[in-house]
Amino acid sequence: MAEKKYLIIGGGVAGTTAAETVRQLDPGGEITIVSTEPHIFYSRIMISKPHFFLGKVPFDQIWLRKEAWYADKKINFIGGRTAAKFDTAARTATLDDGRVLNYDKLLLAIGVQARRWTVPGADKKGVFYVRTLEDGQGLMAAAKASKQAVVIGGGAIGFEMCELWKLSGLETTLIIREPHYWDPVLDEPSGRMIEDALEKNGIKVIRNQYVTEAYGGEAMEGVVLQDGTRLPCQAAAVGIGGMCPFGPAQEAGIKCNRGVVTNEFLETSAPDVWAAGDAAEYYDQIFEEQTQFGSWSNAQMQGRIAGQNMAGRRTPYRAVTFYAVSGLGINIAFVGTVAPVPGRQIIARGSREANAYARLIMKQGRLVGATMLNRTAEIGPLAKLIEKKLDLSARLAELADPKFDLKTLVV
Image (tube, rainbow, N blue to C red):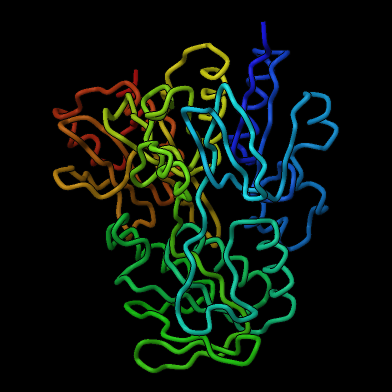
């Protein structure tokens, strides 16, 4: 019997976890990982963590696998290459260097790419994204060489970079187009709580504005705002969202939307092709709708499930996703589906004034998601309530009471 050929496009947490899972279930199969980055598996999330950014831990701690691991697991790693073309009938992938790889089972763990800044001067030295190891190294060097920095965008990346610039001793300004932080995912009280934490730590917040130009010579010297204000700065961290690079998959006839569309088994519309991680727009059995969620833990879990399915152990993906970040004296967490969708009922729990505030998102009497500020201890019971799909329509007053113990509803 011929050995199966497993081809994994993407060397991050989803792809590496899938390869490891396949090897556990199929000791003899041929496994190849193709990674856009030249590096073996490393911790992408560590790039934006203070202990790493400020050099308080050895740089080598970023590596999560060693080269010997790939050799030991008999996993072929091809770094610095992308898949430029797929032929799902012939079961081949053509790389950008012209190499053609055959597969029996294919996984698209292609992640997302940072959305590029398009203002004049965005290509100057000093403009950074927060995605790759090289991005992290550039940001760390800029922190040591700069006096003033700006952060573009009010999301997770923006929050983390505000903290990192400030901890590095830089005069830091956040610029957001929206009227409050993380709009429209968060409501105004939530956004203002985050802004309170930023401003309390000496970070200037500019709302309802956008940059029209990054000025200077080869290196950026500052930015110009929509109203003509000029802000001197030597570094800019840009976090304006991400885009899934699914072009070659879509050209091959694989169904794509915001990401690569899959069912609950992470199977795409093409036979023997799966998707996992940030790129997967999967059918969520708990919420009974298509979902795309970018987080390390979600990508790791999906990589494991995809690997099981590729190796013949048919398993649906079922998990309550979550994301948490803390810094500058505030804890932020999302659990379940938090995208603003018409028709959802919002239950407020706590308040900005109390500095502890959550929004519980209801769909037809069921809890489907929550955003939490300084209430992250409630992630566990809220996740359980979401997973159990309980009808809570008669318990709304209790859900809104910040003193009510949510664990009693789980029991």
